[in-house]
Structure formats: structure tokens, C-alpha cells
Image 1 (cartoon, one colour):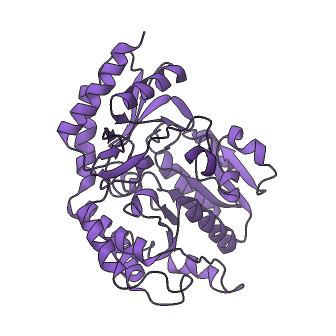
Image 2 (cartoon, rainbow, N blue to C red):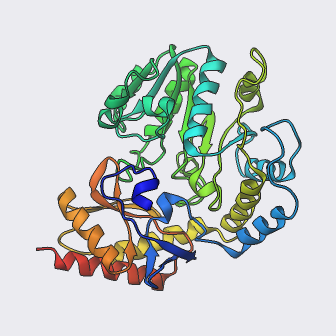
Image 3 (cartoon, rainbow, N blue to C red):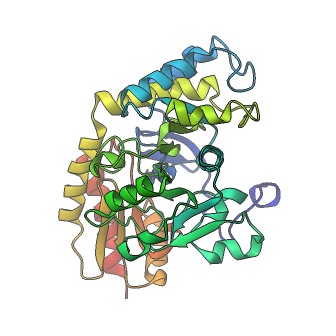
Length: 389
């Protein structure tokens, strides 16, 4: 039934049937358990079904679910989450627009930037990933994934990541630059020293809005609560999703009240969503945020990175890129990587590759993972590497 009735997006889906999940473990119907090394692509930062998140969901279930389209009624879970997240951000990031997903956060941010600046040009980066909807696809940094769907949104321009020479292509015609503070699907690429600051300076010089896509890097994934904290740069618009929702669908674009106000008039309802900021998702996200902040899970991520780097020593490993628990284990070929992924799955370890770096194995487990569990995961990877011919 899965193959016949659920729309497929790849010719060879994993097709694992998972019956339950808790913490870092997923359990199949046949009783086999899998250690989750990818967190549903950086979603389950606090693990599967964290007790505090479940408690918040159950509490909200007893009050109300959907009430009204976004922004018309005062809904406690939205207000509490918006206050909690903005309390952790610089004062210029004080206004939150909740949506359902990362791609929707991107779409809203692009509209906001164009509306506020009155400009049309958008700049993104080679091997960047921001979602698969039409607007987000227009700024994706890979022609392979875009060409079949053209024509796309006009006015999009791609420049090279970590190339200072390309920064001058940001001009007073540019509405926004959208950038990942660590490039995720490119294989966990870290910006070189001073690069994000140079981008920010150029944006200020040209009156361009700077959008940081922290959909994958945020919520403690890269060693701080938000990756931008490590750069000395504050974006004009911040995007969150994935690990933000605690396992439920939720995204957000966050900016100043001044910038966000441009969606309020001329036209009214400049951006609208039916289910964005669903109270159940917001309740889960607030509990999820509390766990990350109170337990300082980003520190766990940094110590886990040290353990992994010390453990994963093998001649077949070309490099280990990334930061904290967004790591890419580089192999010599895509074929080797796919072989390792299949072997790991057979041995009860769920991992995968990167969209624009198919020769790299993703290591992005829940931030709650223990040293014992990491040792188990690394042991399986090393065993699989030894089996390569």
C-alpha cells in the first residue's frame, strides 16, 4: 500500500515501517531497533517524544485545537512561544510570524524583503537549500533540481559561498541576501573567518536585507542556540523550522516590528496562513525550547562532536566536516557512501547522505544522545568501513 498510495519522491525509498520511537531509537514492526543518526534531518533535536513535549501536547489537547486563521485571535500558545523565542534573540528580532514549515518561512521572508525594500532581486548561494516550493526552488543553488520546473520566480541570482570576490554582486537593486550560516545540504560547510561579517557589511552598505536560514542550523544544532551567535552578525530576518517544533510541524520568520509591519497594510493581509502557528505545534515548540535552553543541549552537541572526531579514525574517511552535531563524513565516492548507508541500516543505524554532497554521510543525531549511544553508532560506522572492499 505504501508504494501504491503514498506519493513517492525517490525511486528507492528506505520503506522502513516504524511502529514507535523514543529518545534516539526507532522501532520497526518486526521488533528491530534503529539508532537515529539523522534526527529526521535535524528535526528531533530533543529526541523522539520527549516527556516534556508530550506533556505540553496533552495539556493543549484538552483546551483547543484549530480556532481561526493566523493572527486574528489571541491564542496563548502562540503568544507564549513568540515571547519565549524573542527573549532569547537580539532586540531587533522581536516580531514572529508563525508558519507550518521551513519552505513557508522562506516564502514569507522573501515576500517580506521585497515588500519592505521595494526591490525584486534576491541573492542566494551555490549548493544552498531553502525548500522545494516555487519561490524557495527559485533560490536553490542547484540547477539539477530546478531545471525541470522552469520558469521560476524571476530576479534570483546565485553567487559562490565563501568567495569574498562575489560579495560585490550585492547591489542597491538587491532586496535580500538569503544565506545558511552553515551550509547544510552542501555537506556541512562552515563559513571562513570574516565571511558572514563581510556579507552583512555589504548588505548594510546597499540597503539590502540579510536573511539567515537557520532552519537546519538552529535550536542548538551547531554549538550555540542559533548559529548566527558565532559570527558576530545579526540578520534582519531569521528563519526557523525543523528542530523548532519539537516533532510537530512549525516554522517561523522573525524580524523587527518595523520590517514586519510592511505586511499589514497596502495590501492588508500581506501574508496569510490557515494553519500556521497551530496551537498544538506552538505548545510542543515551547516545551521543546525549554528543554534545549534549560539543559543547554548545544553544549552536549559540542562535547559529542569531540567524541565523534576522536572515535571516527579510518583511512577510508577523507574528512569530517561541520560543527557540533551537524557533521558530514566525507568518503571518496557517492557509491562508497551509499554502500555504507545500506550496511549501517542493516546493522540498526539510520543515516543518509547530503543533497549536494552525495559522497558524505550525515551525522546529526538528537542532541540528547549519550556517549554510550555515540560509541555504538561510531562502532557500526567503523565496522561498515572495514567491510568496504
